[in-house]
Length: 268
Image 1 (spheres, rainbow, N blue to C red):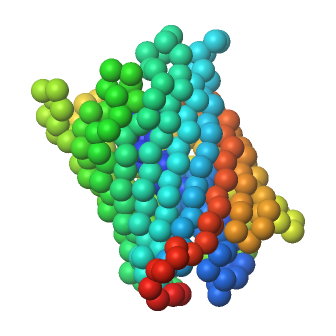
Image 2 (cartoon, rainbow, N blue to C red):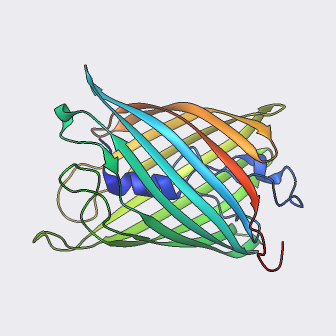
Image 3 (tube, rainbow, N blue to C red):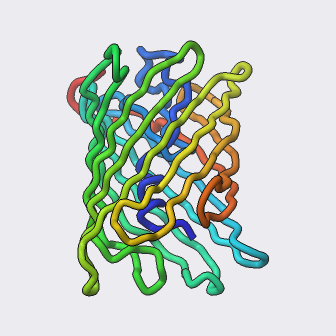
């Protein structure tokens, strides 16, 4: 099973698709951060709520499969500021030592600092806090309270939306184990295919930076996206390991802009 720490990162992040350029003046225009690990530098319009939910099936070996269901709620707080609230539902099999239940809850605050910078493009930072709300006994949580920060650079190369992320996480101590650190890098590309059909491709990796000697990993994700309406986008695809002991996986999900919060002050 992918570690709860990695799944928490996936729940808070996701791939950029060039949908974001479809109608910059429309606050209901969906801003997908699914289906991949990288997030883009853009934010939901102030006062608007966007829901991202997915289902991932991991295959480890014959008769050893698991389901992961990440969900994240995004709220636009200001023109360049977005609140992320995420968690994950795990459903697994005893053969791989993981049960079912809710995972750790993560809180993030994306703040876009630059627009159209010559070097960094659209640039944002995303500090996060992961709470130890999942079950260590069932394997749905790490038992640690972690803090992290993601640096995000987004730009459009013609019809292709490119997003580069670098994440550092300070892992808290728990059960006599001292605090540690973790990292995650991503390079994501999204592009239109025809009409409402788009495609995403991403490479992401988890390097070993804590001195533990644990093997690093690199994975590849790809699949189509379908813009059902300006406010709803669907995705489907697969994840396969390039390096390291990671399972093959299939995923599906959606991103839905639910609209404006009644009474929320201001606007885009």
